[in-house]
Every structure is written in C-alpha cells, then in structure tokens.
Amino acid sequence: MTSLHKKQIKFNSNITISHTGGRLSSDSGLVLVKELMNTFGFSDLAKRLLHLKENRAYFIHDNLAIFEQLIMQLTAGYSTDSSANILRHDPVFQVILGRNQLASQSSLSRFLDRFSEENLDQLQSLNQSLIDKARLIRNDTELIIDIDSTHSDTFGNQEQTDYNAHYQTYGYHPLVAFDGLTGDFLKAELRSGNQYTSKGVKAFIEPLLQHYNHSLPNTDILVRGDSGFATPEVYEACEANNSHYVIRLKNNKKVSQLAEKSVLYGENQKWEEREVQYFSVPYQAKSWSKPRRLCIRSVREGGELLFQHTFIVTNLSKNVSPEVIFSLYAKRGTMENFIKEAKAGFYFDKTDSPRFLENHVRMLMSLLAYNLINFLKTIGFDERDKGLTVQSIRLKLLKVAGKLVQTGRQVYLKLSSYHVYHKEFYAVFDRLRRSHSWV
Image (cartoon, rainbow, N blue to C red):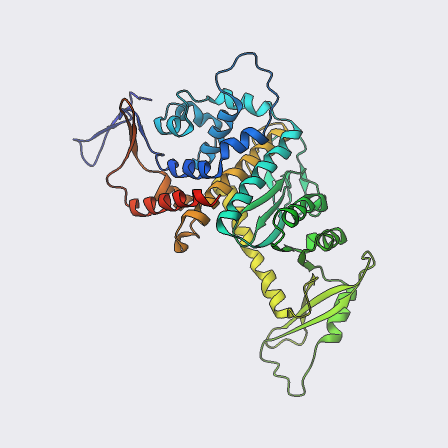
C-alpha cells in the first residue's frame, strides 16, 4: 500500500517522511510463528478437525485460509478486523500464509457468521491436539490445572450480557483453565455475566481430566482453584479420575471451631511476634458424601491476640505436609498473569460482536493465538527468556523490518541488517527446526 501523505520533520528540515517505501513489511518475524505452526501440523489439524457449514456458491478465500489469517493477525498484535484491509497486501503475510490474495475485513466478518455451536467443540479439540504435541516435545509428565473465572466487558445489548455482582458491571463471565507449570491455555468457555463462579465447572474440567488420564497415563494431575470452586462436584470429578486437588474453602462457623480447637498457645507466648501454625484434620460438610482432608493455616500478627484462619480441601496424601500444600496453592497466583497476558496481548476479552456465539469464537481464537506464542516460548526460547511477555516478544522477534525478493525459483526474505536481536532470532529458529523431529 502506498500513501500520498508527506510530512517534513521539524528537527531536520532536510528529512521528509512518507509511507511510500514499497513492498516492505514490519512483521517479518512472523516466519517464526509459521515455522512453529508447520512443526505442529497446524493446517492439517485445522482442516481435519474444523468443519464449517459452507453455503457460498462462489468464493475466493476458503475457510481455512481466513481462519489462519485471523490467528496470524492476533499473534502479530492486530486486534481489529479492519486491519485486514491493509495487511491483505502485506508481502510477508501473503508468503507465510501461502496466498497471493488475503481476505478483507468484510470477508472476516462473514467468516465468523458461518460458525455454529458444534464448531466451538471443534476449536477446543484443535487446541487440545496442539497442546498434546507441545507436551510431547517438552516431555511434560506433570500437569497442574488451574481453574478460574474472569470478566469480559460488553457494550450495548449484546446477547447474554448480564450484571455480575462480584465485578459490579455488565458483561460476560467466562471459565478458564491454564497449566500452572507451562502456562498453556487449556480451555475456555464463555458464559453469561450472571453465572456463578462454579456454574458448569464439572462439565468444564471433566473432559480435561479424562483426556489426560486416557492419552497420557503417566501424567500426574493436580487441580487448583479458589473458594468459588469449593464444590463436591469438583472433588468427586477429580477423585473419579485419579487426580489430586487443592481447593480453598470459605470460612464458616464449623471450620472456624475446628481451627480454634487446633491452635496451640505456649506458656511463654511471645505476643509481639508474628506466629503461624499449620494443621490437618478430617472434615465433612453436609453436602459431602464423605470426610475429606482439611488443611488449616492459622496466622496471628504481632501484637494481636486472635488468629486468622485459612482453609484448603485436598486429597493429597498425609505425607504431604500442610505447609507444602499451602505453598503449592500460593503458586496459583501466576494464573492471574496468564489471564492478563491473554487479555492485554491477545484480546481474549474482546466482545465487539452482537452475537454471543461470535464472541465465543473470537475468544477461542485468542486462546489459540496465545498458545502459539506460549509454545514458541516454552519450546524455542532460552530459559532466561521464557518469562517474556508477548509485547516484549513482538518487539524483539516479530516486529522486524523485511522485504521479499523473488527470483525464478527462490523467494528470499531479507530482514533488517540492523536487527538488534538477530542472534536470539536465529537461536529460536534453530530450536524450532530441531523440535520438528520430536513430533
């Protein structure tokens, strides 16, 4: 695309700027993402698992091509569909997507209209297949399923938008699950804004538990959740699938009495010092079918007389001390960073479609884009760089100036000679090439 706009620089009147540089791209680093997708067989998986109802008599862009274009736009950091009107002419986008002509904004909108409820399960199956390949490459044998709910703002009279008392605003209230060890986005489900935190959680996590028990029998599974998920159906789903759980329990009169009976007071109590005590007792709530292990942490701040108690329900062996269990639960806090990354970096909470189904589809596409970058980090990055956010990754590796040079038989992608992070770029590229043989 060319532009006739020209601006003269104030600090140096000899310099004039204009967008007339020709077929250059600022997203040449996306070849790393495409190389990763090729390693995972992304196109073949999507073609096999995703089946949209095709009611067009004539079309230029098939559904798979538009799907990959949307994923690539999200990965590159373009949140709006209208970006496609310019990106469709980007030479790097064209070559990595293997198309001489890419879809415009209107084609993307019509593409989303072709999704059905059945396709939501297919998108989740695609995500699961990609995660399975990543776990195979990384040789993962442990899994921590962190479950939570979050909020997505809505604007206007969008389908199923409702008031959420916890967030005190209107919107949606999706369920999410991440791997607490790798950061993989395991699953997401969009819900109406007035749904309680644990609504539908059994149907949400049970397929995950069954899949990993069936597909990867050597995987040790732990489920973590806050007090919003302290329900018998979560405990029973984990127990039925030979999985462990660490779930925080809300304070109530009965567990408070158990805690107070357990607290120890010494004869030479140092009241001015902070004190922490841990206990483990059997406990059965009225709605539970059997007693379960309740871990208690009692904390008294310096100068205070009373203890404040925190409770966790678990089925971990008694050989695992309450101190370790509370430490294990505390690491669940990293999930908040994963959610923030999905929202800020991949527009997971973008809800600009009037239809609930379309917003659900957009959410799952953001999930897939998030996972592609997370796979890039966990497979291709040096250990010191695995904590980088997507914004830093784009700055260092993806937003690279480049131009395509085509000869009779070959296509050359020539990147900027002054790319500061070119060594890191090629180190990631080499690791991705080697990982191809592990799938």
